[in-house]
Amino acid sequence: MAARAVGLLASLPFCAQRSQVLRPIHRLLSCPRTVAAEIKREEQSSGSVETGPEGRTPKKTFSEVQKERREQAQRTVLIHCPNKISVKKFLKYLSQHGPINNHFFYESFGLYAVVEFCQKESVTSLQNGTRTPSMGTEAAIPFRSRVFNLKTKNPSNPTSEQSRVQCSIHAPPSSKKLLELLCYAESIDDQLNTLLKELQLTEENTKLRYLTCSLIEDIAAAYFLDCTVRPFGSSVNSFGKLGCDLDMFLDLDEIGKFSANKTSGNFLMEFQVKNVPSERIATQKILSVIGECLDHFGPGCVGVQKILNARCPLVRFSHQASGFQCDLTTNNRIALKSSELLYIYGALDSRVRALVFSIRCWARAHSLTSSIPGSWITNFSLTMMVIFFLQRRSPPILPTLDSLKTLADAEDKCVIEGHNCTFVRDLNKIKPSGNTETLELLLKEFFEYFGNFAFNKNSINIRQGREQNKPESSPLHIQNPFETSLNISKNVSQSQLQKFVDLARESAWILNQEDKDRPSSSRSQPWGLAALLLPSVVNSASLAKGVRKKPASERIKSLLESIKSSGPENATSTNGKRTVSTQA
Ligand code: GTP
Ligand code: MG
Image (cartoon, rainbow, N blue to C red; front, side):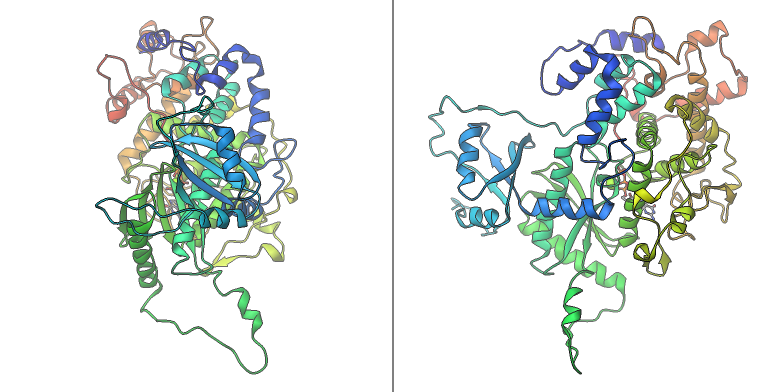
């Protein structure tokens, strides 16, 4: 298998194209020693976690970041542009509506510009100067939004200034490129940081996510004035990978909240409302009507599906202009709180995100996770497992949820639907860990730990940070941190759990091989994390030579079984080489 992988790597044209996508790769490859420093610097400019000077303490709380980004998004418009355009003239044309704070271009079914004005009034001014197109035989519904089409008046007469514009990249690097980068890293720590840097959401991608929520909010506001559409899940919890879905929460709770104080004297004014038999039915009715609206009038909203009978009802659709697969829910406030908790854990120690990204990527490469719902483990559950593992280190790298609750003050108090969701939100109040273990050690130990975990009797519990007896018989039990009677991994089957255990053991074994824990001299041999991402990591050649350290023929047998049973993405491709998927 290793030989095949070498072939795969050797056949890759290094820096074959000097496209924008390769620019950062080229830079990293040419100065490998500076990777770690680059990552620190670039991580700070990334939109995913707002970190302080040491890369540890966020400057802002989760809600401060959300508020700031929301406000930024409300001043922003999305413009579909001709493929060739003079950026200078384009910006000058838009500036007649007010000063521009920021802009970038990207490609998704054509060329798009994201333009952030300094003031919200500029958006209204632009809308007032925009016409509704007259269609030929079709009828246009005159829908006024912040998504525009820019037409050039003389398309057949391009000016010399019109040229292809520089586009920001919103897709993760290919598996091949990622493997190249990993092979050229200096150490396993460097590999984990490189993976994080390449896959994490960029500043532009984060802006586009908030803008998309803001555009959907405009549509929902036609029915529910003052509603809010908030991103949650991996778009905001700092564990999002380029290409991940966009989870949105339609928040109706804020409506009328501030008008409550305006009552005086003996009178109290209330809106007349319709009542329905249950909160669930209310949720279904609200989502149903918003789903219809998105389908009929939402610019670029396609493939709208109303999944209203799910445990958590949702509307799923593709937002073509941004390229995001969106899930819109309402009445899902606990998930928003979970996102805040994960954001805090991700920001507490720089090793957390690097480890989570690598484990997620490893799991995806081996088809342990999937974008289709099923009996497999989810990214959310994997993140909980990493957090739990880091709570179990000595000294702990992450605090337990109970200890975060102890640090909370009156303002942090939060009870949702009877569940206590209180924890400290100001990161400065949390003491940094004294643990100095390397990422390399943590990666190895993660696989050792879960390769030998007593899943049959123990539950994973980040609230207490210790194993507990399983309260029910599901193969994998991970306690929901807020709704503590629930198991977030109830869907996982015994065979999927066994596959996870087998692969974890195999990966621990690989990392203990002398030739796999350091760069090969030629740099073309997959090693460290790169070796773990290859589908069949049991090196049959080394087995034949008897160089394995912890043999146990039974284990090898089960490892080979697990490889045989891995999913279609691990299948041999038509050219005889194994393919690797890194999609999370
Ligand atoms: P991606 O795979 O990158 O999309 O990760 P994600 O964290 O966004 O996961 P997903 O889109 O499946 O779910 C979005 C959010 O919903 C998660 O971050 C959690 O906050 C919440 N969530 C997902 N699954 C569960 C679950 O089984 N139980 C509970 N309580 N919350 C969940
Ligand atoms: Mg998600």
